[in-house]
Image (cartoon, rainbow, N blue to C red; front, side):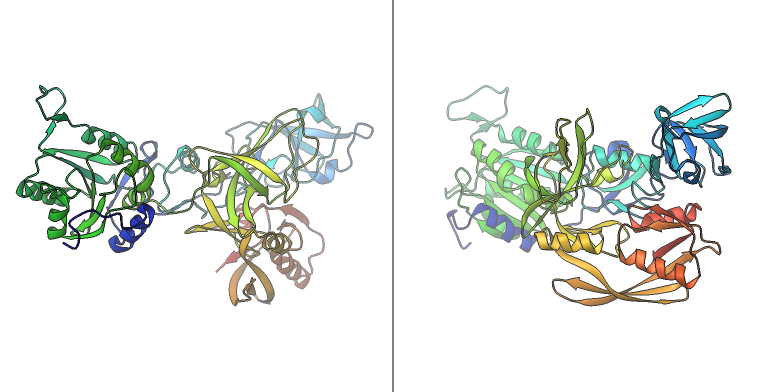
Length: 552
């Protein structure tokens, strides 16, 4: 052995980094379980939405489904009268219904809407008299409608491999009809306590002996972090007994933790056994208590040797070893933020009159500091919630919107929130996570603003496009590095185009669709706003829009 004593050689956190590089990837195997048993478990693969959410156009209020052309300009002074064509209750399919001009349907919150519904007028802005409904207001087109995919489109990854399942993810999976998922099996930890002076609690105390407590504290600490723990028991200081206990533990378990026998005494043999059977990567760290900590590898498995000091056990598990424990479980290594703090706003948000508005949001960090992206803006958006680890509160006493760039207070939704590196793309279909990078759709104007604020690390903008038949080749450029590449899209279009998705402002998708419409001579059409480009694909499949772009 190079060292007979545990010298404080390296910073404890640096020691873990050195050890992880030597340890390499660990594969502990997967198993399939019911989602209700998944809280705290780690996803073994990406989980994708099999359907758009919501799966069909739903009403967000109790009221009347109407055609916008029938009620445009309606007011208290100039009400509009419509014939009541029927009622569509919750849980009733409406795919066969079309609203005829001059008519409307009564709907409830959650009702399936006829596919040509332009808006839903709330009950409070109407009056029903016999077979007629009097409309006293004209909300904007699309109001009070949750279109398919407006929460998230089908094909969106809502839980990434390595993410720990929580209540938000569980709700999203259930809403998508997912019953079982693949998770990493619980890693098994063997815990060995060494020292001939140790007694089991309950035995008569003898002179020179102490009761053993580390086995129980380690079992509790590790089980609370999602490990299956096997207490091997108390092993004396004899080197042969230690060798048998440690090597048999390596065969059975994914991680071996020993306490005691790590210092420089004649009978401190744990580090000798580990060094002979494998190799010691770190022996001795700059930590008090816990200096004689050793990190070793036997047959590709980690062996962590902690001093017998009971306080050192808590310090090591709580402060120093969490990154190693996450690696063993298969968890992602996305950085985390404090459970409460301040961040600058990336999108303008409004409060709610007379109520505290709560907006679940996503934290991102760039060269300009910590930022927060308002993400869940509708109470039905359960699949979006799986990405949101923080939230913003807007008190009803605030009379004006919160503007982009303003600093707001955030709080965690559960444990410490993830902090992503932001990439904004003018041609992204929606939202994706690659490692610690959040790649999200944004207009060019918004993407360039985020880059200028120091929030986005990279943006992807259109640098031109060519339309050839039912294919579109988009030339892309990344900023600030100015790298060029191409993306190809297929054009989904019906012979008769009446309803067109609006992609928000002067976006690349909007320009492409506008040119296709001009080429086909389409001049009279209705624009239906979409939140994410992939949502238009789901709406096209249900006949809600007549043109969409699909990445190839």
